[in-house]
Length: 278
Image (tube, rainbow, N blue to C red):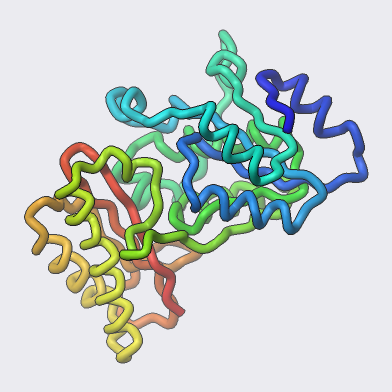
């Protein structure tokens, strides 16, 4: 496994054999089984696998959240080496955003709701860094997790709009045995908060059960999820949503498909989760 820190090093390794296909897994590090499942899918689909590890400052709306984001680069690289990754890119901030940097990628409607409304400027940071990763790596395929459902939808829209020459592959959420979606933020939960965080999955599954019983009104689904989350004393609800999975517009009546999603605070840790119904 090669570790690169510069754009030139990445391109040198990437284009050593132009005939090889490459899968890219963009990450912010602190890897868990969810990330590794993306790596394994990329390994199965491609000749070579590249992983980026970069805590992207321009997608954080709170400096405290950026500073608190966990980082364990050595451990991450050991995990990736065990998975047979070919190239890991660990750029410094000034490699990604050199002095004088002033070019950003921003989407309109799809990035303004849900996470975009709750965290202004977040997706401008996401799409800018992902566009740069795509330009540097020029992968055949790029892999993202369904846990960040809106992020996946935003990136797919960007790829269509800007005609990036790659396929975006969205892989299922990986959960702990008790249902909690795996996240790098989970390590910041206190023991009582970790137990309370199961309310996200309970809320989603309750709404799913109603859906399967034919109760598919958007307002009812949102009310069900809200009531369950608000019943947990340690949970502070940011938002709940029952939206179209492609446009992310909220469902106002019965529908034949839905993306259920929510964001919930436990102390100062903000967790998101979602489920697609169709």
